[in-house]
Length: 311
Image: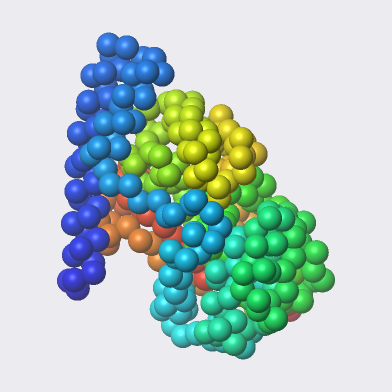
């Protein structure tokens, strides 16, 4: 067993045991009083027990300065850098442009960066000054490209935020060249931080401890206070999250990996390679036969998908 795997196993074991403690405590508290105030108390206890893992979100610029992206994960999964080196790539859900810039500088790629957020596209153009990146403001469900025109599509932790996943997958399949590659990863809802509220909620698997309504209300209250004090301007002022599966700054489709993979194959893709970040399941693979463990310990799933050659 290598050091990195041992470290990850230890980390997952610790957070799982801590989660079981907070789950037991929450059951006791909620058996006495099931109100927003009691759930807020549980969230705060969770914030004490678990370390905060969010990035600096005071501004777009502070965020990109604190992120150090790397293509190593995807190169290792593919077996080389051939999926991106010198290719025409669509960075789908490019956000603030970190990955687009990386693909140009480290893979000599010709990149089209597409994102739904106009302000993100505007920032990326001004910040990176990269003439080899074409910025497009658009949606994954309605890609403005010709059929079979793109060699590779890359998408980093975007598809959990797309509500019409089937439509987005069909659009990607449509624009890819025959034998084209779709490289992506997915933080599913059952990922330990799959709730995506970790700016203010440190607790893993939080939606299985307290209600989603209380989590979103707590997140929105904290965000409002911070923005009134000139902080967390990564998000538009006045942003409110009422539920996760609605159009807002979080917007999650709540798919698990099995549901997503059915959609993948239904759209005609072949899953050429995949791996997961879940270390405990690598050590104890028999746990995959237990639904709870398989669902919650899989972690992030990374995919290499291929569009079949035309016959």
